[in-house]
Image (tube, rainbow, N blue to C red; front, side, top):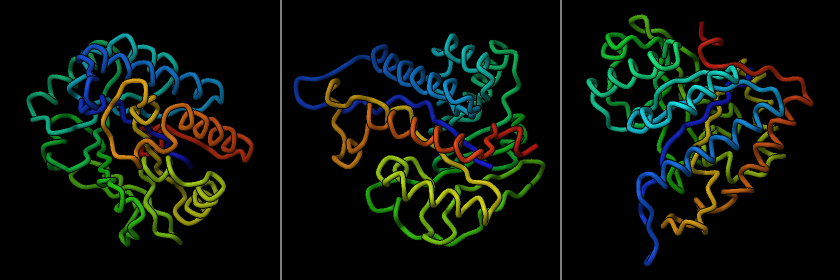
Length: 250
């Protein structure tokens, strides 16, 4: 089973000299990138889970409605938000979409399982840091989904042979021939593989003048879109099953 997920996050506003955009323009980039992702998912008939960063969730209502309408799952992405803000965002999105928000993703876990349970979440998907060296660091830890205090804890997937984690940067930089073989190996070993990408990876960084590390520019924008298109085609050609997070866990 392939659990394909996307983090909807505004890119950090650091720019080269003489460049700059406001919050509205930054959000518009995220919206356009997400629309591109949705088109590809619809083309290949693949369902996914979208983790929406809490600080921008209230400004994405029309797009969230569209994501739900296409059959995908909405979950939340926590980046340094407090429990009060998370509760408010969760309630707001649920009221608008008419769907219960079951999942939370955290990059650097700031809420405990007990706090997540109190806020009404059913699962948490914690992910690692992905700087230039970390993505290829060999990791050795359990990739099994476990339950604690009524919360399913979903770890980041790791290739059982290369020990490379399935973070956003690895998808962006690895040749697809190697990446898909890695996916095959993981599914045979673990029954599922959790894959995630960030919406800002689909940005044309040269157009907007963002100041980012050189390795983050590699295969971004249109090239990232092409890689996702290839990957989705490969999934269907090999008749591999995909699932939204909540369907697989529960």
